[in-house]
Structures are given as structure tokens and as C-alpha cells.
Image (tube, rainbow, N blue to C red; front, side, top):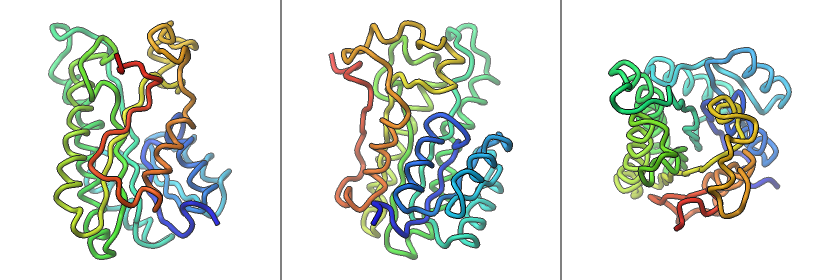
Length: 248
């Protein structure tokens, strides 16, 4: 039996990169998974490949109406949502504070911060009714401390916000069986990372004690643990996956 056997999960931003790796692992471990993304072509292709236990819905995570449609689709297709992985995110332009516009700031926060808030708000009522649920919010090492790796003020602010919201919702809803955790990846070899740097992460491996960038599935293994019943007493915590990059 798989580690997520019988669980219904929603994973956002799942057409490629870490989200794709999460979806593949979740299906392999027995979950029924609704994957969402704004990239319809890649998202539908992945769902088709993963088969009957995976279903794709086009979603803008900053839209509350899109969230309602996703939760309804999951319920109609598989049943009530028991696991939410808020994975969708954007880096935004790599600029200094003085060059970063208000519009650019709000666009980053709409995806990274508002999207997580709306996702939790959409699934928590069903989790309360069920008396259980696991929410895994993907933040970043930029949500742990401000460094040059934080990319820009909006990205850093939004990822700190994800960390804070995760703690608050874990504290508020733990009494009804809902667990909430944040995951803080460092440099991961995803299409978004490669697009922002290069195929080697812009030499980022030099800053990592383990000497390399992580593979997406190495983050997925942590997400799987948090989603599963193995983490039944793990809530309100940060889980850093960065090869000891910020340990010093």
C-alpha cells in the first residue's frame, strides 16, 4: 500500500518543475491528485500521462473563483480534498529595491502570497468537516533570511509571508486535526531556476556545502512525508531543503 493510499490531493503549479515531481510521487504513492497550472498544454499532458488518478484543472491561484472551481472539481472527481500542496510560485524580475515597481511587487505577491492564502481558505472548511487534513506550503530559503539569494524584495516578502501564515493556520486549526507546514527549498534544478540563471544554476553550487543543486524529487520526498500520516504530529514547522546552504 502506498503512503498516500486513498487520499485526495490538490497540487498547484504542477505542470513542470517541483510541482510535476510532487504529482508523480503522489500518484505513485496511491493518492488521487488534482493538478493545476496556468500552462494548460503541459498540465493536461502530465495528467494524461499519469492516468486515471490524476486530473488537470487550469487555475490562476490568485483568483478565489478559480479556487472554488478546483475544490469542486476535486470533490466531483475524487472526493473531499485531504491534502493541499501550495506549490505555485513566481520569482519576478531580479531587480534592486529602487528599480522594482509597485506593479511588479503586487504581481509577485498575488501568486506567492495571496495564492497560498486563498488555497488554504478554500480547503479548510472541508478539512474541518472531515476532522483531518494536511497543508504543505512551498516557501523558500528566502522565507528564512534575507540574502542575495532572495532575488528581490517582493519574492522575499511573499516567502516570509507563506512561512508566517503556515504557522498561524497550524495554530488556529490544529484542534480540528489540520496540520500545516512550510517547505523551504534552496537552489533546485527546475525550469524556473534555469530560466533565471542557466543550466548550472549560475554557479550556485559553490554556495552549497553539499556541492550541488537539488533535484526536484528531493523536495518532493519531504512534501510526501508531510502529506502522509507518517507526519501525524508534525505541524507549524519549517522544513529547509537546501543542502546546508543557510546553515552557517
